[in-house]
Image (cartoon, rainbow, N blue to C red; front, side, top):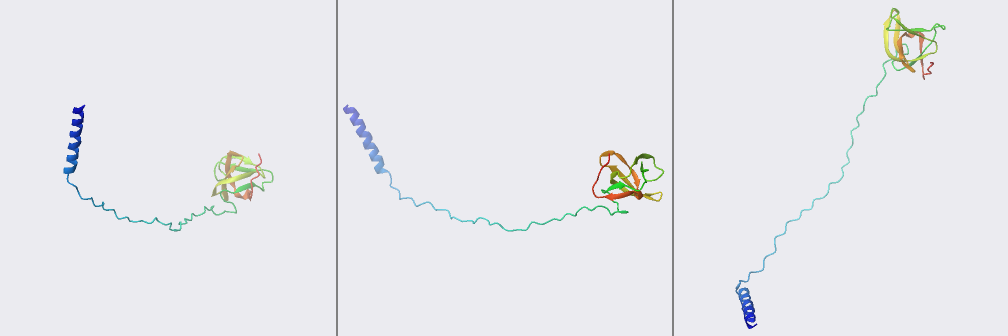
Length: 148
C-alpha cells in the first residue's frame, strides 16, 4: 500500500511541476467582429400593365342585305320552292328543293352567275342539306326557326 501511495504522490508532483513550468500566455485579444451592413427589403413599385387591344373580328359586308353567318329564309317562290344547286349558276346540278319558310345558315358567297347573286346555304338541323341558292328568294331572319 505504501508503494501505491508513493506512486500516486510522484504522479501528482510531476503534474504540478509541468503546470508550474509552462509559460503563462497573455490573454488573447477578442476576435475582430465583422461589420454588419443592413440591406433594406425592396418595396413594391406600382407599374402599369400594358393593355393590348385585339381587334374585334368583323363580318364581311352584306351584299343585298345578306352576309356569311346570317340565317336566311326561303321566300317568294309561290309554293314552288327554291332549287339549291351543286354550284352557283342555273346550269349547275340540282341538289334538292328548299320550301318556303325553310331556314338556312349562309356559309359562303356571294358569287355572281347567270344574273343572280348566289349564296352557299346549310340547314341548321342537317349539315348534309347544303347547296347554292339565288339571293332573290332569300330574306334574312333574326333567329333560326328550323322546319324539318
